[in-house]
Image 1: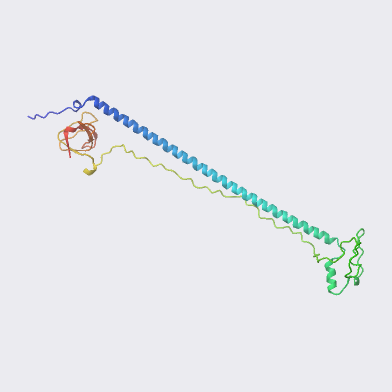
Image 2: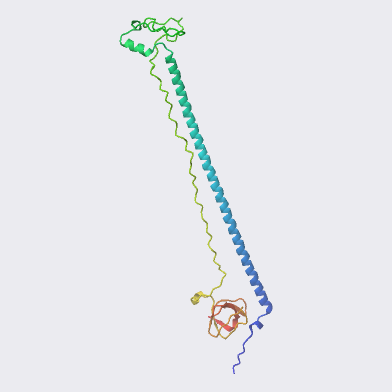
Length: 271
């Protein structure tokens, strides 16, 4: 009969080494989880900072637009007030000119027209007596082209430049167009941030690939059955892939059925 004797894997490795290995694996896993939590927290804080900065920039932009709009409204209001003041000043001057002309007993323009036609003021009929309480104008009582005596208190001593005697048109300037109060706010569309799901690089999935892409491979020399769910089973000549040489006597890798676990290193030969 055969002298082959199946070896017990648990008896070939010291229990203390195995306990140390699993304790280290647990510590590594906890460290990995803490690192993932830290990165997620940093990402949330970064997004929050960007949101606050974006809101601050938008608020500053709105405030700037509001100030510019207020300045434009104030400038338009001042311009309209200036136009109204100039219009009132022109109207006041027109009223004063019309008042001076209406107080004269004779229109100087008419006198010049008569002279151009060869008619002197003395040839005309005696003018109608002025209204009571109004002084007679010396303009009609003196000879043409004679200087006025210095003792005369009247202002119509000499011919003055022709002034239109037509009725003054009291037409008010057209009101300026009303200030446009409606301003359309430009709101930049907020950038939509979409966080892509992170790929879990720690999940193990066995996919059949070429031998060059399967890492370290070995061929089974003997039959081996797993003692628990931390080990793998295989038959002679089957291939184990993705081998990690974690110990001198024990390795771990992917078995023929795709499961991942430990196996005795002396049961296989490297390819």
